[in-house]
Amino acid sequence: DINLRFWTSGLNLPFRDDPTLDSSGITRTYSAVFHATPWASIFYNESSNFQPVSNATWVNALGESPSNSQGETQDYGLRFNLLNNKLSIGITKFETSAANQARNANADVGGARNTIDRLRNNYKIGTTVSGPDSHFQDMLDDGVYPIDTGAVSDTWSYVAEGYELRVTYNPNRNWRVSLSGSQNSNTLGTHLEALGRYLARDTKYEGLGTWRNYAAELRKVAAGQASTSFDLNPSIEGHRVQAAADALYIEQQTDALERNYLDDIALTGVTTSRSGKYAGNGLVTYIFDRESRLNGWSVGGNFRYRSANTIGYERDLVGSAEREPNSIIVDRPFKGDDWKEFGMMLAYQRKLSRDINMKVQLNVTNLFNSRESRVVSADTDTNGVYGTVNNVVPIRWELRQPRNFILTTTFDF
Image (cartoon, rainbow, N blue to C red; front, side, top):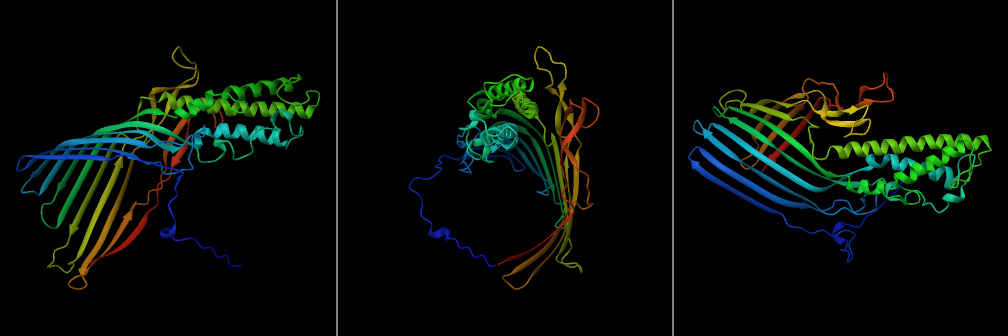
């Protein structure tokens, strides 16, 4: 079979008089450089901007569309040009703040979505032994609640600041050496505000209080008592078994949902290092002499380094006056491993004619084809699912991209 589909050209699509999304804002940038001496300069850059909402289908758990994101960046420092401009050294202090950054929050509402699905399937539709339940017939169909859409967002704010040192050395026309290192910190600000309002707002079928009440009513049925929230018959064994299973499921989902939310909120105002606090980069390039047989060829190598990342936080298993049991202790982070990678470059450049230059370049990333995965998330296994109770276990890994060969050809006219 041949399936042909045609679309109207973008040039012929009319603008809507009532657009789904209308964004406006102002971006400002200021820069200044003061040459204190022929070899030393002071610079300052500042920019403020907004980022329009990129996806009109995104809504938060309450069905609200996010507003424009806003941000501001400042960086200033010193730059030195030494050894007849062969050596350049730059020292920079930077600070970037961002507010109302819309991000995918589907992972944060998974427990809510699972609970809604369980109630809908077992009691509105009635796929189990008890059949449809009269208390759930006005429950909305799948895909109608905002958390059903799979396009749930929420907002984050943060402040990132740190220092960067850059050194570039060109001893002659053949060699180029570039090194950079940075120290950075990222402080998490207000985030998941809409999710907090959603969880605290108890409606007929949604909210932590509502779901826990359903679980309590199901426990009654499992114990042989009638419920005012379900049609389940406590005298029927199949109904009691179903009630016990659904109560346990809802309790597990809501407890995990609330714990994850509270863990995230506990990080407000905390400096995180999810990608490592320190970073380093290096590049060395050698261009062969024009008089040599390798005229037009150049070769180079590079490396990248990232320090150990924060992968989680210790939990207070007992609890205290400041924390609920099993809450995270934000000043006791778990550290992962540092990360480094090497690469190389081989290039050939020549003139095809008076006005046309051609350059062919081969880049190899992850030169030594390191396959070690990097843990990016870990937690305390309070239930002993993966072994001994209260052991720290990895949850998510970052897989390194294997060795890659990238061949590019560039023509300059």
